[in-house]
Image (cartoon, rainbow, N blue to C red; front, side, top):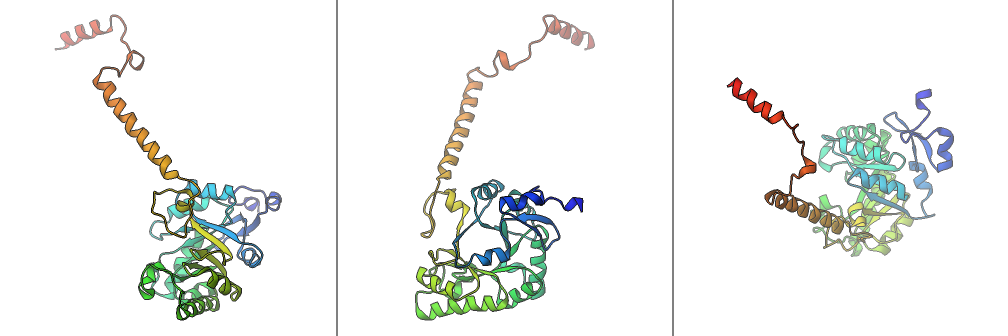
Length: 300
């Protein structure tokens, strides 16, 4: 059992509790430590609002864990799983759901297989846009599943495009029933996107699911915002529901400007004879070149 003594983060079992972490074994069979389990998340419902993000780089994932982000989602491509695995390794102690591609599973069996593939590399759960039938199959296989309701971008043609959903009674009831169907299917959570704040608050009271709000106000159990929005990785315009806490895009542009300036100075320095200078070159010994030329002459 010695090989099981530490988790993915290298934390000895005796220290895990001191750091507020729980020792776990993933569905894929790996030992580790996490800040939350599915049960731990559900125990928080109605007690406090958690925070969630989706990082795009290992630096972002590591920073989010260090900052105390409660849960993360990461995108998972079964044809190229290495990026998701790297993000998992960068934040080894944070509960992480892998967001699986909608079109990667066309049957319930394929949904289970896709879920298992994600869990095998360290996912604590999967996030999907599947029908309740697929979610039931995955949940019965022991895979924690987070569904998606409200504005589901990949299915937006059914709700009139990329717009707010739930602003009429019929739509509000449709959102509510969709969430209850996910609950009945065995999901543990649902991402709720761009619905009225008050509607989500009422729905959250009427479902056992953890509700993750993105663009749906403060009525959910979790506040979800992409890392690129939090950090301001991109210039405006921004989604209305987002908030930028940094302007990294300006820093990146300043760095790019410095790159261009550096290359220009190099070009000018070479043209003007400033590079290479005496300190950049190796000087031959006093008689080396004379001896070399004499040797070349004899050789020819």
